[in-house]
Image 1 (cartoon, rainbow, N blue to C red):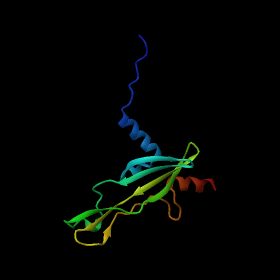
Image 2: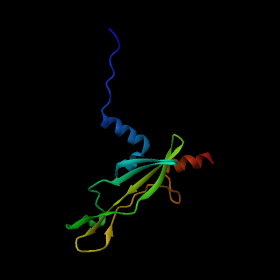
Image 3: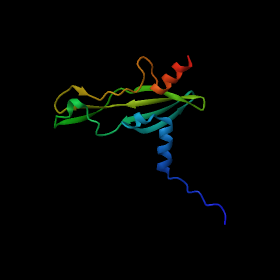
Image 4: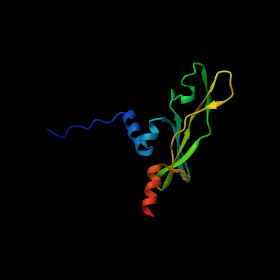
Length: 128
């Protein structure tokens, strides 16, 4: 007799669960987590746009190339262990082969006029 032994979750399962705790699911739909850094006064989670998210302007174009990343967008997600967590999102940048004009996708990662995820902004507005 005795208690049934609990199975330890896989590292992949645990990482996925923790990712969803720290980064809103609507962001994880378009971005992958590439790293996390702890600073004395904050945490920063680095996100990069998933491959294959081609801007609509280039969908009909056969020849386009990946041309690095746009400047990152940094938004406040929430606080954890008394430190704010910032999400630093890099969108992919593309261009047509032989041209210089760049194209990228736009995402609503924060509330207008406030650099924080919508759920955090709505929570703070309700507190007012």
